[in-house]
Image (cartoon, rainbow, N blue to C red; front, top):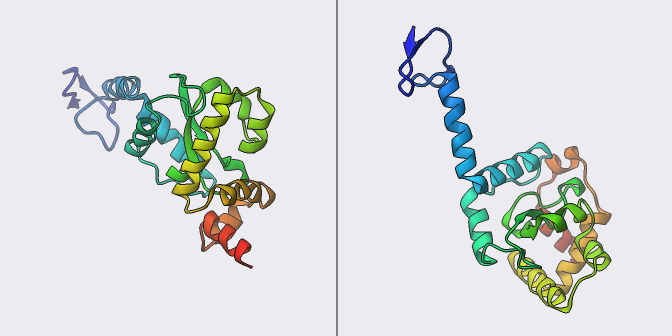
Length: 189
């Protein structure tokens, strides 16, 4: 019989094998509290998991998501809304980029839902965007192009290239170069 350090109750077989000092109920409650108090951590964790399941890059710790949010003052990069979620500019379903700093932006939740897995450029042209949103869109594309070591026009071309060259999990696992390196190799030839 073990005694929980949090609730003080003695329990039989109510402890996780890796957790020797807290019973399952207390550990679960502590985890729920942590998740409620750290929503950004949870968002980044879930996005890393989604990319990992598709064999895409997923080196995106919560502090990097916080840095991306800080870059945009904690607001949507297009609308200034504070109700944002992490948006993959190149959708995970195409098999390029993944959850990495050069592929994520904070986007208003309703806009994120409307984008889904569409090409970012095609989606933006479909929505009724104000002039201010067009200016911000250009800033976002410039920001992402710089992060990926591309020019503005190359980055626009890269987005369409990703969509035209979808990869399977097997192709992603066999790849020896990043998506940006693959793209650069194709435009050099």
